[in-house]
Image (cartoon, rainbow, N blue to C red; front, side, top):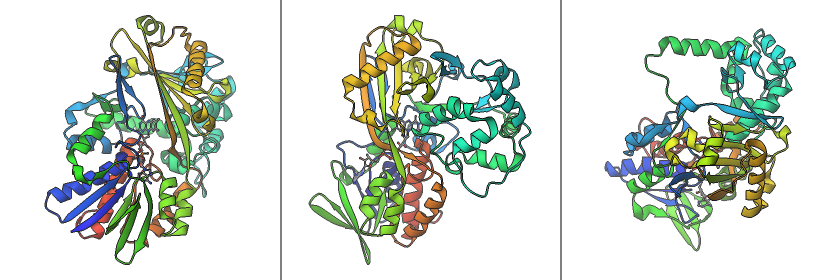
Length: 470
Ligand SMILES: Cc1cc2nc3c(=O)[nH]c(=O)nc-3n(C[C@H](O)[C@H](O)[C@H](O)COP(=O)(O)OP(=O)(O)OC[C@H]3O[C@@H](n4cnc5c(N)ncnc54)[C@H](O)[C@@H]3O)c2cc1C
């Protein structure tokens, strides 16, 4: 019987456990133990139910175009629970000079693909609009080195585009800033499009036309989620795992390499395994691996993480009627607010709030505001209340409020991330029976984490000769 330890019970670790459990159930001689430091499983996937509303503490959905999370849901019996975002209401605003300005139609992740809506938009200055037109003639460029997203976007559209769109969009997804994130790791398609086509606008348009020509089914919603919230994924996974193998409130302090396996030390106990999957944030993986390989630990420890705070506020019907249509707004740094973005949940996923409730979810923190973690709940609610008053004129007190703090939970892929990953992979391969999973490597979203957990389990099972296709 082969024994595998999984460290970290977020979606990455749970997916790894599920992959191994499938093998176990089919008669493969393998067993596992999953160690999770907190009392609950699921990591940042947490759903609460408050006053008839569904409140997501961490992720509220995932990108539909990345298939791995939805595929997993299908396998664990949640196929009929998948729902799409209400894209008929899909409209996002940018706060510009204190006012909500709608993002022009045809913008594809900050790349304009429709001329008229962009020309008519009050969001951009004429200078930027002229840059957008000139961008159409940007020559192909094969960059020899990685660069920041800000540098690339500036080269194509100028700095106003970085401030108004690139930064707010990236802080929504990564809790990071365009000037700190690697274009090759975060927007690999952009780097590819630039080297082949030069102009990002032309490349995007070409891609869209190609897709429209082959499309035989109606466009899918941008975001997918679960009827009863993201926690449903956690609950369904846990229900399929071997209950005796799940050790919550078990902080792993170290993993020690031996000739024929690994020793995992948690609390006062240590246990021997043939292999270990570390599915924690990379800063925790670095601590665990310090004794096994200093160089690997150093590279893992150099991947930066940012912290975030989500605040969900429930309001009455009057507030709901006063709010604009659309999914919500993004706040550029130049506006001087601490809020990074807000989602009108009642529009994005209407069934998550009764018709007589407005549900507003706000994001704070990110790479530029770690200090927000030190603020008390009361102080955070004061900040959010005051900024919502200024931005969307909400003066009413919320009927309920929930604040969730996530310390060092969002990986920041800085310039050189892909090279660092290559070094990490080379060092990992020298330690047989070790696999790494989580959001610090090849994608931060829930689908990427599901894929990383599956692949990590596949690598270990393949090493043991138990998985031919991994
Ligand atoms: C506020 C927020 C909003 C987000 N929104 C979205 C979204 O809308 N869509 C999307 O796709 N993605 C979103 N993400 C990103 C995505 O949710 C995460 O990247 C993903 O869930 C991370 O999963 P994970 O299992 O890799 O890590 P985690 O969920 O962080 O789990 C790691 C686990 O390891 C445990 N651990 C750490 N050290 C040890 C140790 N020494 N011993 C034992 N256990 C340990 C931790 O307690 C934790 O439970 C969001 C993230 C956050 C924080």
